[in-house]
Amino acid sequence: MRSRTVIFKRKIYDTMLKWKHESNGSTALLIKGARRVGKSTIVEEFARREYDSYIIIDFADASEAIWETVKYISDRDAFFMRLQFIFNVKLYKRRSVIIFDEIQKCPEARQAIKYLVKDGRYDYIETGSLLSIKKNVQNIVIPSEETRITMYPMDYEEFRWALGDIATIPLIGEAFCRHKPLGEAVTRKLMRDLRLYMLIGGMPQAVATYLHTGNLADVDSKKREILDLYNDDFMKIDSSGKVSKLFSAIPAQLSKNASRYKVNTVLKKRENNHSMSILLKDLEDSLTVNFAYHVDDPNVGMPMHTDYSQYKMFLGDTGLFVTLAFWDKAITENIIYQKLLSNKLSADLGYVYENLVAQMLVSSGNRLFYHTWPTESGKHNYEVDFLLSRGNKICPIEVKSSGYKRHISLDMFQKKFSGRIGSRYIVFPKDLKKEQDVLCVPIFMTMFL
Image 1 (cartoon, rainbow, N blue to C red):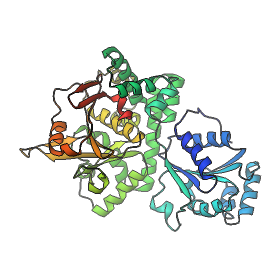
Image 2 (tube, rainbow, N blue to C red):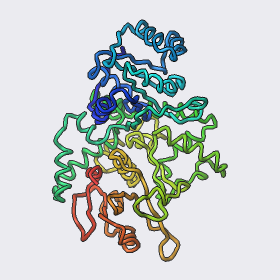
Image 3 (cartoon, rainbow, N blue to C red):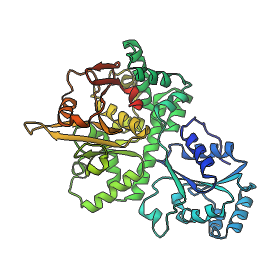
Image 4 (tube, helix red, strand yellow):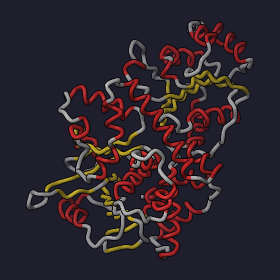
């Protein structure tokens, strides 16, 4: 068994429990997600609590005996017998689970899921990242007997749970439903709480470090370890370093407030479209980033009107985003964190809030889309930061990093597409208020949009 680590309450647990009861062994559960989001930890906790016994095969650190045993995976009796001897664990029919951790490192085991599920003796859970990278799927048949779910960094409610706070998010939800302002003092307090999440992020190791030391420099060091791990993975995907450069440039690209991610300004030369599409797909598959795609004709069914060659990229975790944005310093000093926490850093933090809103929308189950169109003069663009589909209407969102006097893009969008629009939102760091038909909501309410 692995050494016990900090176990945080995660919402994905209920999804796993639903799979166990509804599937009853008819499918394996595949949990995909970026490295270090907590997949292995939650799976072992689930196995420990929901089954009489379990075996975890970690293909990232498997012994010679394990690799030899995998050769017998087509002979189920021999495979199960050897596993029980290796791990000194007895498996019970329909009361035990076998976990294939880091399944991408053993494509043969993933291909065998079809037959293991058909055998029916035990349940199976797979975890993995970079699951669609060519080398991880070539020469195998991907099993259809998989229920696939994605695990993200801890969302804001899970972060509050980790801090021992179970009251704040339900109360915020009630206020949002009633469209009730909270008052300036309460809003300032809640925004400071949110900025702590923005700085630490939702990677469980970073959260655990904060709870253990309370030192944001220690948290920053832990986040740098994770980013170094990501870059190691990117170099394995693409030894030229292009994927790593594309990832590292995300804060700089967002800070320019451009209407799209400009690859040629990062790689300095024009890339072959086919080669670049493969690199971008691999980066998206890593689940370390969230892509927002441009919608040419905003309407319900936005994927049908999407230009996949025009996109923005956000980091999947805003805590990692902050560390990457200040990567020029050996360790992001506590003074920078304290100024960010107090909202006193002079730099324009609009792009940080935009990344946070993107993360919160994805955590709530939304895909990311945006829309730009030229102004009357043609010299500039109007831009709606995010578009949500709700029923038969679309809901535009504009993100503001501070107060504002006008929301021209939102107004022009309303004028252009009035018949298609439901609610309109300004997301900003101030108290909730209603301005005619625009609802201005504090950023910490994003999850309820």
